[in-house]
View 1 (cartoon, rainbow, N blue to C red):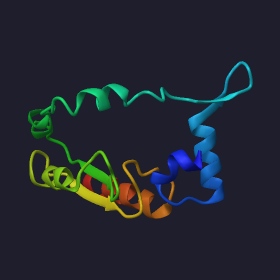
View 2 (view 1 turned 120 degrees about the vertical axis):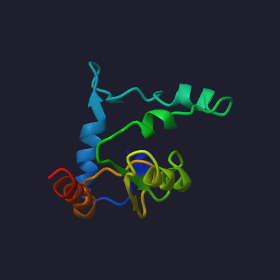
View 3 (view 1 turned 180 degrees about the vertical axis):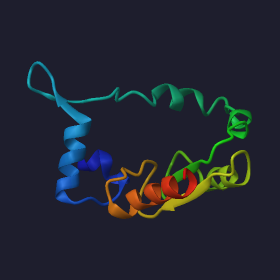
View 4 (view 1 turned 90 degrees about the vertical axis):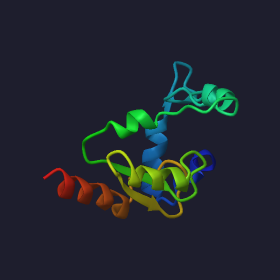
Length: 124
């Protein structure tokens, strides 16, 4: 689990245990299996290089406050795209989280604070 989830950033022992218990389940044979489709990105990886999908028209139509969380080492959401999200459409508050790949787990207090502060400041 640690090898596969290393891009999620540094975690305490308790956080690693939580991630493991969240992402894995024992099957009927007692073997640990992912609790999601591990091939979820296969189609994306197969088709994206051949065709780019333009969804900006949908993003530009959003009318509520938004925030984009980007792991600084993301291999999916580029810094340029995140910056564009901050300048167009709903003009998302863009927050880049250092030391993290694509998906921050939001288990660390500083990551939780970013979301909490956004929700309290923007939604109030």
